[in-house]
Length: 448
Image (tube, rainbow, N blue to C red; front, side, top):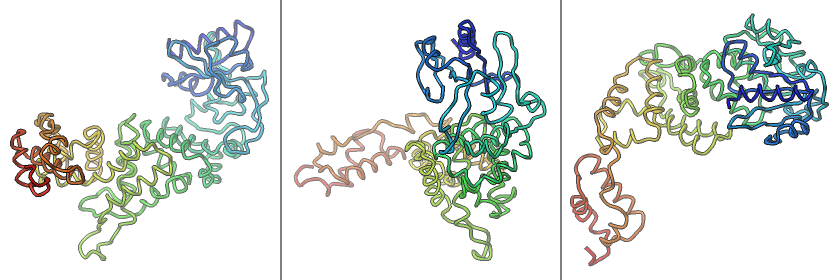
């Protein structure tokens, strides 16, 4: 069963039991735009306990706010009871709710007019109490009611307004825009996890450049990501970056980022040059040209700190940090020893993320893709077993040879693998002789 089928079935069963039930929110908006919604929500005047009685497989995910998750055949749909929200002392959740029998009352608590329409899937009747359909036709993101109140209720709605405007190519209605500018500094009150998830959507939905331009013009960028805002007006050497300053270069890369790119790639595109503002040195200072010495290493540390602040997982932090740290290494691939190049291309998610970050970096600056093509050719022509060869020796082999376990093990095994990757060691016997010759003094006396 698809989510759409489940949502229609929920509405049908609720209606047959004497309740009102409608599709609501983003799914209605997307259906009117001819897009397949990613998820479906249902609004009803049935109270949560009654919803759970009608759908025994449902899960209580927020019954005190009137929200029940109905699960069936691999699909899931949120069912929320019509309500009014009273007070938002934490800036996210209502202090208390009052259930209602009025769909209009329920709509008035929602965020934007384009998300405030309801649809009866049986009759295709649309309930539009806030002018959502007209705003959809006109391409406008408008807060429902008083925008300042809507944004006090949930500060994340400011970033959501930006995301919707960028995603659909819409304009933010002037009063809504001004309300965002007036409250932008309060975006820092949003939990790190929620802000991270919203910014990730901004980066991966296919409209990252206009979204970040809107984040800037609404005043949300600097309090959300001050390190990114610092890229503005930081000049670059024109011989390598004819496109302009660090901010313009980053925007161009965001523009070329493919929709639905992985979050780690998207964040690395945003943060790959985050180390340039603090390492900037003018041509007057260097005596030749603008330089950003050490910006990849410093940027990697900054990127990791930003990701920790936004509560990324340890794995994602490690990957984003690696992408930023290694993005300049492509300029050296022509001179790399075989072992160094093989280790480089063995980095996790190398082709889909490291190589793609480099391609975007070149495409949006000097345009020279020689290193990119060189690496692609190497990957195409080099058998995987040469890049990831089976070990010639293990720690057990070293112990059998009389070496005492310790830090030297790692050094010896690394040296063996280096010779293997360079093509100097091709079999176990050669590896054994290499170790005996190079590291005999590290073995216990009389053992070799």
